[in-house]
Length: 323
Image (spheres, rainbow, N blue to C red):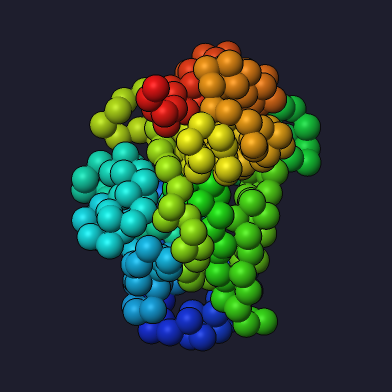
């Protein structure tokens, strides 16, 4: 399909990019790698009259174990030696996203700010016109959970649950200056608004606390085609043990709700307990029962829900000390 017409801007600084955004009166999108935005534009999914590229802002490309720029390419994360040594879960996760070609263009910020997905939304204009439009594009009602106020499209970014379990903060720059937002407070339960970032703000960096480097971490995902698809379920785990005693435990989910989920109510309740088979089974069951996936992506809600427990058990068992 052919892209719609828009004016393309290439600012060279954050201040210039923010100023351009303000001058567009809401009719704009920021673009990083474009691997999500441009396919949506080709399908005429909420295109804007102005597209502001972030590729000329050099300060957004930094990669280190404690600070990752929003324009850092996924392919660069995979090969970054300090990251592989100190936070190997991030290169591991980046290697599971999309395909090698898309990872050359796709960025950290783009994956975090990924537009929510739904089979009523991510379709051609002709399909949507025949089926009727949804709340997220041209329509007035959510077709997943019929009502007129909240979009139930699913968040499917891979990096977000990993950053959440690492305790990361997101840095935003906008007309009022810079601010930091804790990862667990960044995303909002609406497939349209998606997060607390204001339209004219730019996600500049992700800050990762140094103590995250001491955690044992992993990320696994469920998808239809292992070679390229978005997750229909992703699970991130980070923990620390004193022999068998849990000192820290964080579990994050993606692909099952309008936001990535951080399951702190369940994990903090078991801090100080022994990491045993019974604890793992009970925790996995409790988290699974707390989640309600919707029928809006490939694979059924029931299967995705059941696999939450399977993945949590699989991941926590690998960290159990061997007697």
